[in-house]
Amino acid sequence: MSWYNIKLILFRELRDQMRDRRTLFSIVILPVLLYPLMGLLVMQVMQFRQQNPARLQIVGAAELPDSPPLLDGENFSSDVMLKDWSPEMFEIEILEATMDPEIIRQTAQDAIAAGQFDALVYFPPGFAERVEQFRDHVNGDGPATTGDAPAEFPQPQIFVNSAREKSIVAHQRFSTILTRWRDKVIERNLAAHDVPPEVTNPFTVAEIDLSEDPERRTFIWSKIFPFIVVVWALTGAFYPAIDLCAGEKERGTLETLLSSPALRSEIVGGKLLAIMTFSIATSLLNLASMGLTATLVMGQLSAAGAGSRLNFGAPPLWSVGWLLLALIPMAALFSALALAVAALARSSKEGQYYLLPLLMVNLPLVILPILPSVEIGLANSLIPVTGVLLLMKTLMEGNYHDALLYAPGVVLVTTVCIWLSIKWAIDQFNNESVLFSESERFDVKAWAIHLYRDRLATPKSGAAIMAGLLILMIRYFAGPLFTLPTTGGGFVAYILSIQFLTILLPVLLLAALLARSWRETFLLKLPYVMTVPAAILLAIAVHPFSIMLGSLVRNQFPVDAQTTKQLEDCSARRSKACRLSW
Image 1 (cartoon, rainbow, N blue to C red):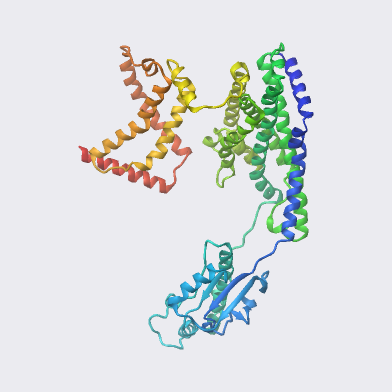
Image 2: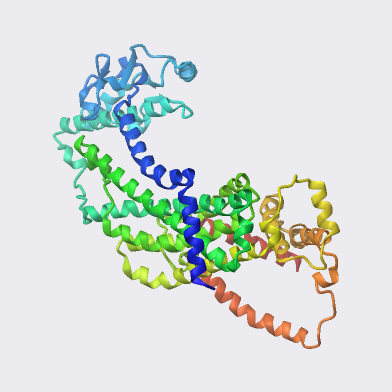
């Protein structure tokens, strides 16, 4: 492999891409303008945001006790309102008279469905009287009768519609007011008995945050930055890869490059470095634009008094360095994948369709590190992409001990993935049928005939992978259709039907479609003399290893208590079925 040829191809591809205005816009201009425009839009939306009032109808206001007051005229009393709340947050219609409890539910349902109110509050008859009786009983002024417990009082009711957003908001606001009013009632009862209100709250817990401001900002950005880096590294690599492969096919310049003295591996190396350059540039510009926008927006919010509540600020510069370190292998991995996938496309339009499947495959690996309570471990560090993001998050949070402990596994897995991706890209460029395939109209019938007529003696590795995926899919969808029996004979039939329908039948169907010789495909021949004892010894040797491996997997991926209970119940039912069969 000649590095001189790789350098020539690299500069050629960079020069061609720099002349493309669409590439420059998506890689340079869009990241620079996207986040400032989003920040400006957020500020404008917050400036013109209006808070809609919650419309309440209070039925039975005459049943409210006079002290402490819940209502002050047409509004709630200021004692039960939060400090930053205003009377304009509510539109209240007060009905003094009570309503028949039999029709209150239907009345509330009709009023909320018609949009007259967001919620209806009902105070039943005798509510104020029973509140006073309870206070007198606590003070020892009234007779002790059964039924004086607060739970047996006629309870206020609030009718809401949880399928309407405004009704949910009205319920939340009034629940807060009702809780504060109930506290006022408790304070009044205690004061009547000369008991200080502090007896209901003998102590408070002081929360002392030991973290510093850079640590808090690092914690927040460690969940955001890895996601941004991966998404933009993949996006920044995919579009140049399409233009460097499918675009050259359309322009007719790929044949000229392939006819040059450069090897196919050198062509892949030059194109790969060019795609990596745009991938890294896209991620860096997005990070810089996002960090600058967050700094400016948080500065304006702090000036308005909202910055302290958000606990959000510009990312520390030292934490960004770990992102740059992880960006290079991620860019190399996604660039190689994008190059291999783009080589399959016959045109730029077809290449656009491959971006979504590539994103969907990587999306679960990217979302997993963002989930709460997910930390780096032996099992997580061996997951491609996820291990890199978890290592990046751990380094940004300053947990260097765990980072050094699991870094070798992350590096090994990432290196293997990059090598396999590059090898796949080189194989694509060595395959003339892939590079020079022409656009054709797809016909299902012709495709099925081609599969059966031109099948080989044994299927290829792709057919084996497809068979495995098909078995997993069939087992997933067919599982709920089978019920675990309680009898021995039923249990045997259950196992046999599962094995036949979800494993044997799909394999036989694929073999009939893709394999010309079943004897060679399934190795239908007599075994050698030493094969039988070797198989027996292998089963004996593998059993302890499988138990040890299962224990290791359970330790690395612990199962929650609910799932463990379900598995134990299933195991108990199977044991019962086996005893019945005997």
